[in-house]
Length: 231
Ligand code: 5RP
Image 1 (spheres, rainbow, N blue to C red):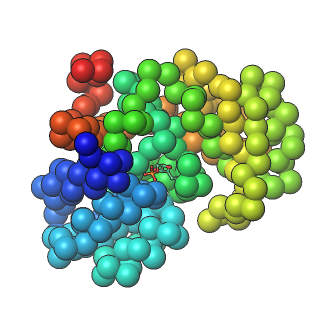
Image 2: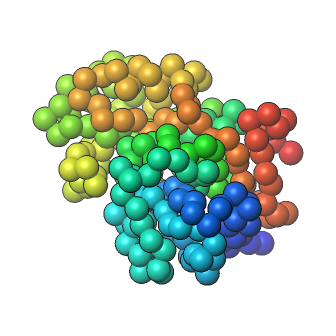
C-alpha cells in the first residue's frame, strides 16, 4: 500500500514526463505551490537544461527552484507559457478545483492564466463529487476582512481567519467551511465580486485542462473531455 507521500512522488514524476515534450529550450513553465509541487520541482530539476526557466506562484516555490538551479523569471517578463503545473486541495470530475491550502491561490491563478494548459497533479484522495468539503480559501485585503466575512456567511459559509498567516501579497486568508459548491463557476464569480476579495480558491472559470491523479494502481490521466466518472 503506497503512502500519500509516495502517491504524490509518483504523480510528480509522471508530471515531469508529461511536460518535458512540451518544453522547447527557450520555454518558461509555470510552477505551483505545495507539497506535491515541491516534489514536482525536485523531479524537474535534473532536466533544467531542457528549458529556460520557470515562473513561480510563490516565494516558497521560487526559493526551492533557485536552490536547485532552475532560473526563476518575474512574470512581468514572461509573455507565454506552454504549461502550468500545480496541486489542488480538491478536484471534481469536471476538473474544477479548490486551491489555496498553502495560501498561494492568487499568484497561482495569475501564473496559471498565462499558461496554455493547466496540469493538475494530485493523489486520489483529492478527487471529490462536489467541491466544498475542504474549506474554501479566500484572500482578502486586511481592512475588508470583517465585511467580506459577513458576505461569505450570507452565502451559507462559515469563514474563519487563518490565524497568523500573511500571504505573499501582504493579505489575509479566510477559510470558508460549510459551502456545498454545486455550481463552482457561479460561486467563483460571486465571491470574486465581493469588494475586498483579492481572489478566491475556486478554479472553475478556468479549471484544469489535464488531471494527473496518482492511485494505488498507477497514475491516471484525465482530461476535460475524458469520461471522468470514478473507476
Ligand atoms: C497551495 C495550493 C496547493 O496546490 C494545495 O494546497 C495542495 O497542496 P498539497 O500538494 O500540499 O496537497 O493550492 O496554495
